[in-house]
Amino acid sequence: MVVSDLDKSSVLLDEKLLCLMEQLELLEEKRAALNSLIEQGWFSMSKARYSMGNKHVSPLQYASEVELQF
Image (cartoon, rainbow, N blue to C red; front, side):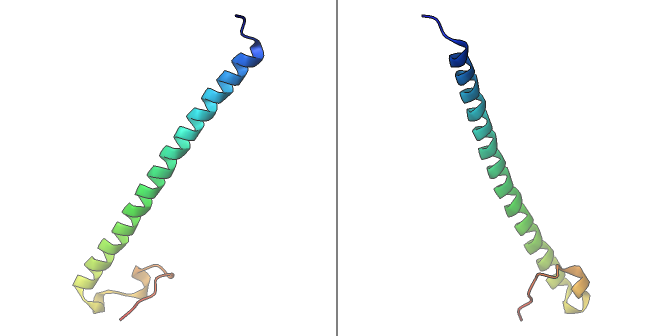
C-alpha cells in the first residue's frame, strides 16, 4: 500500500493540531491556577491590612476597582 504525500501531510497536520490543542488546554489550566493564586493573594493582603487596623489602610494600598464594604 502506497501512502501519498497528501496523506502524510494530513497525518502530520493532525498530529500538530492535537499537540496545539493539548498545549492550549494546559495553558487554560495554568491560567485558571494563576487567577486563583492572585485572588488568594488579594485576600491575604486585605486580611493583613485589616489586622493592622483601619488607620494603616489608605486608598493607595488597594486597587481603584475595589469597592469597600463596611
